[in-house]
Image (cartoon, rainbow over all chains, first blue to last red; front, side):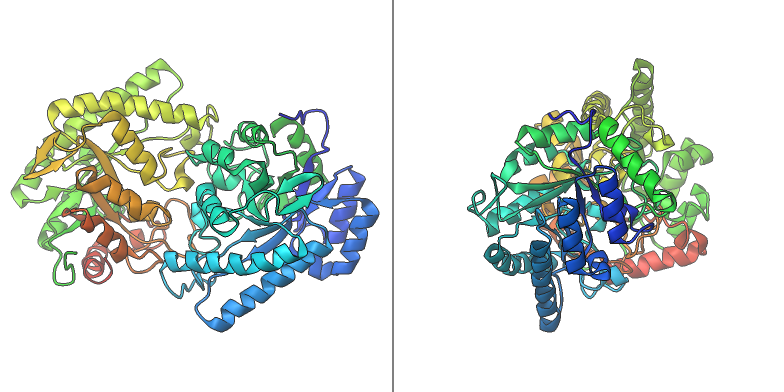
Length: 298
Length: 298
């Protein structure tokens, strides 16, 4: 396992972590000033700053994208909504390509309307079929431009409203069904990545009794991204009470050891939604803490 | 599938549903007055009312126990704490027997100390080993008195602090390991129940992509209890924001159809923790709503 204690070469900052404090261009410059080599930005932040401007800023600073957030949200109940979701995902793929992201992260969506509090139906199996079909369609375009798609299994507490792919096993079943060839579809920086793989966030999967076995199943080709934060006890909010690494109960080094045992050698991306704590602190303090905890707790 | 629309013969009330309103003896009499045939009480409520008094009240009213809440909480870091947990579980088994409960429900526990906000370690695999050993020891006593143990897989959002058994598959793996003979160990009311089985609560398992397959695997012998409530969108609190059946996104009749397809013919037990809604309403209104929703939404 790589030694993270002596530096932060493999730290990436998901820009949601300091989104309350700074716009994206400022986040990039603050990361660059601290020797942080990668980020993972969100589409709305990129749109607000301007895609071309951000692409140029990344080239100038040499900062890489460990991922791009996010595509997905496929389930729908009308043909028009389905088509709109596919169009939007194609645009997300193209933006990810423009920014030279390692992958486009997919938060696949749950029951249509549930995020707004009004689920249009209760058929989670139907939503999962929509997800399968939506990924299949998006994958065709992604292959054509050479961009990997990373399905992010979300914690089961988000099954209704954010993502009905809720375990690594389920995500890998989708990968095997839609991208059976696996490795070799896209070559990035000398190692083979599958066209369709997973983004593994410890927050979503740490509880899973099958986690180690499914990481071994995924292998290096399907593991496109590795995200860290921590699970607090108590957790006071389902969405925005994630902890800084080391402040919760997740044995992050153990999970990283499993991921690296199959050959993962990419970034460890910090993604913290924290309305009542980290989003209220100075952005520089947050980044400095991410660096310190990357060394001590990841 | 049984037709629940015409009556509530198979409705059971988990007494947590109206615990904020009434003491246990009042709950029993209010249920009896409404023709509710079963309850599932909590140990602290029984202790407050008196075990023998409640046993007599149940005999007088003819109300059955669809389960008894609860044993479990096995993980510990000291020998003394382990021994105390086993002692407590033995007492819970004996109380369940005195009350003639269908089963003792096990909420197995998570990381030691996490429920109080201070986890003593982060090794969930070790906690799971503690759970396996604790159930094995308790099962010996439970067999000797003829009481079934029902492992309740809890939603993964409770993995840290309440239960590190988080899927039906995981619970059934435990059952198969500790009680390989399965059916026939205990005969209750003409049908064969396993000595060790599961309590299936739709709130905890509705999201699971393997749910239908694992229910089929469980079979009638392992399905010792069936609990219902609903998953609200949004869910505002991890513990105490469960919904009344019909108010959320769970397709309860579909899950009940899977359970009944393997021969389950027991009670449908309503268990609702709802600090900001149902616990603030009149207890009679809550019970009447449970009856109505049992007919229309279960």
